Picture 1 (cartoon, helix red, strand yellow):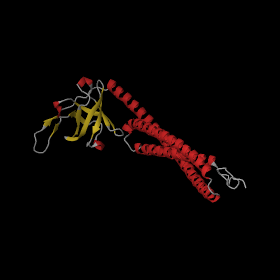
Picture 2 (spheres, helix red, strand yellow):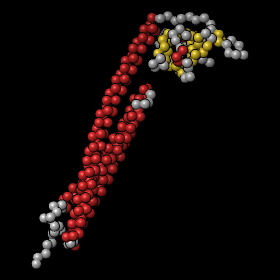
Picture 3 (cartoon, rainbow, N blue to C red):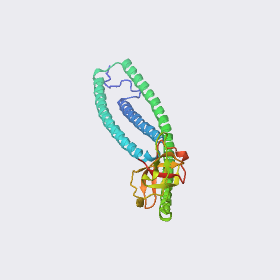
Picture 4 (cartoon, rainbow, N blue to C red):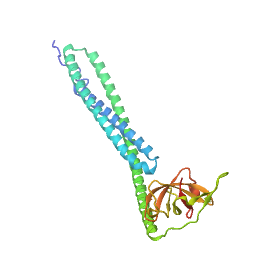
Length: 278
């Protein structure tokens, strides 16, 4: 009677061998990498969704910050990948050692059959996991397409804002070149129990343009009136203070000023008086 020294005596009954074990380990590593990549992309998508709710004026800076964070995530994934490759090498070494041990010990057929059954169950489980990951990847691809479309819409809005800004600056320049300074009479604002105070204590002018979409006004005061960037003015009508504005751009005869909270933006209109805030 001859002895069968092969590490897999039941090879004719069960075709699974050491190569399938290596493939299973490699597939498991690839699935792990896909899951980690999917998690990184999911975080990126969440950041994209949150950025859409932020103020338009801060969107460009946020996109840059998100790109930096994404790069950090990519670096983290790279480190994880290197660690997985190390683990995979060690797993291969362990698998080879186990095969040698299996060849020496000549386990009985029943034990080998159980081991093969266990491996087959693992392959089936991995197959199910692979199908699930493929489904998740399909959903993720669809989500990426949606985010890409939203990004295109956002870029279109940014282009529209830039166009509106250019048109407004052109209009301001035209007003600066063509509209003379309006000389105003002194206006007095009286608080309860206080003495009247002259508005003419500083530079005086009028609101010539109100932009409610971007919350700023254009005043007929400019460099020739001694204005400086950051200077604040009060908007007054009928002895009532409607709000405050802050100078952001200065031309020769005109200036653009942002409406500061808690101003009554809805009530501000062209022709309202402006005075230097105390």
